[in-house]
Image 1 (tube, rainbow, N blue to C red):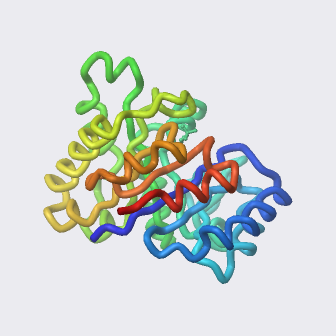
Image 2: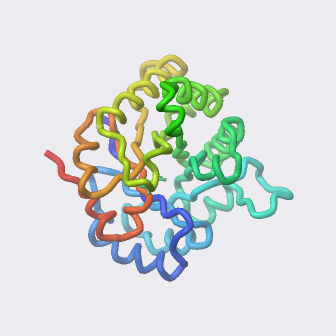
Length: 252
Ligand code: PGA
């Protein structure tokens, strides 16, 4: 049984005060969830405060990025140990906005992933095709390339600690969600790649989240799919009420 994960990616939103107020409101409505793991990803500045406020609840805190080095001359970057010290248990790696804004490559994703694993963080690695790539019929190739580059050199044991988020770039922040069928098709490709590279056990236990315009009114249809093990939610995670509704999605 794969335990679902519902993660809220706040991106560059919320001050420390706003983050604390959010967590205080989220705790009573989602802080005891048993059917899924609940993760929030505040910006770096609010990580420690959010983690502090989440104490005593089941809510976990993720960073939105990490550098691969332990320390060094990397202005503006933050190391895995710094994230752990601030109270993060998870870290998002390779989000398409970082690939787009900061030119992140699969090779860098791989280095970040290894640094996160070495520090005991749970990486949430994002993959997914652009609209042009989908329209050209290249979704599989893109996923294969991102998988091969992003996950190379890992042992099956390391791979088993990773969460993958399938986020078609054309569905992020656009209100255009992939249909559950489209998401399932891509999740199957990713699981097949995991099977090929890391074996049956790793493939079966791999949790693949869907991300891209997830909202309270479409989460039920997505989570009804056996292939979909959770969601990475951007815009709709910024409001506590709507994120709580997503966490408490309809279950049969
Ligand atoms: P969105 O973002 O839910 O606003 O589409 C998802 C993401 O970027 O993780």
